[in-house]
Length: 252
View 1 (cartoon, rainbow, N blue to C red):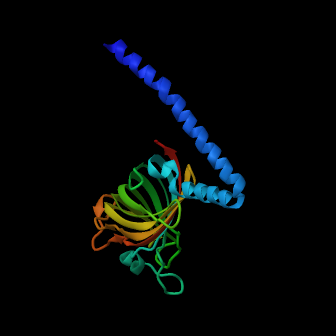
View 2 (view 1 turned 180 degrees about the vertical axis):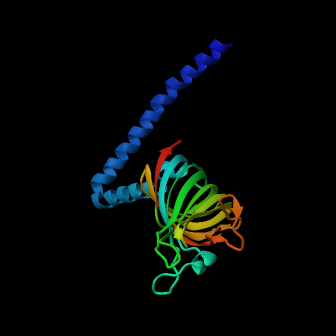
View 3 (view 1 turned 30 degrees about the vertical axis):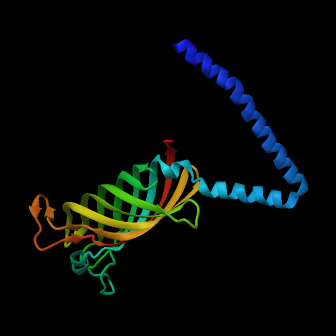
């Protein structure tokens, strides 16, 4: 039975393949005639067809990939208690702006969903104040996040995204010669961040990302040498701006 079916399939291919080839040859011949008789219109048609195909085919890594990201951000936190305890030589308070460097590793799923883990190091500029010869806040943020994105139809390889990060924030205020003592104020909390932005694929393996959002992280349980430091909070909550470079490894 199997051999009979196999023979029928081979006979069918024997007739169908020449017919298909003949049809393709006839179509190519007609197309060549059209090209010779109307060269300008044919060339223009081919150019527009090629352009449409390129616009309809996004980079593979934008659809599904593993990626590694390096990012830098500016965080503009409240830090109300920290600012109020310190005075610069002109009588004003320090700004408390945080510089952030970080890295992420994640998975792009079907071009619409991203899941990842990341780590960031945050720090303020070291300042010299009336109360202390040196004061600086150093923090670390380890988080996981989920992002959703949608492509921009009018701009190839550009998408808009929104997402949320959830993780552990640890903060340390290093005070040098604070009224004659060196003090480290330490605390940790769960922090959240909402981010919105845009991602653009330059070439198949590389993309750029810019975003803006809000970081929520109030470190309330502050200790010094294991003892509580009452009525003091390192409030790192505030708006954030981010720039990132991503390297993608396409999955399909």
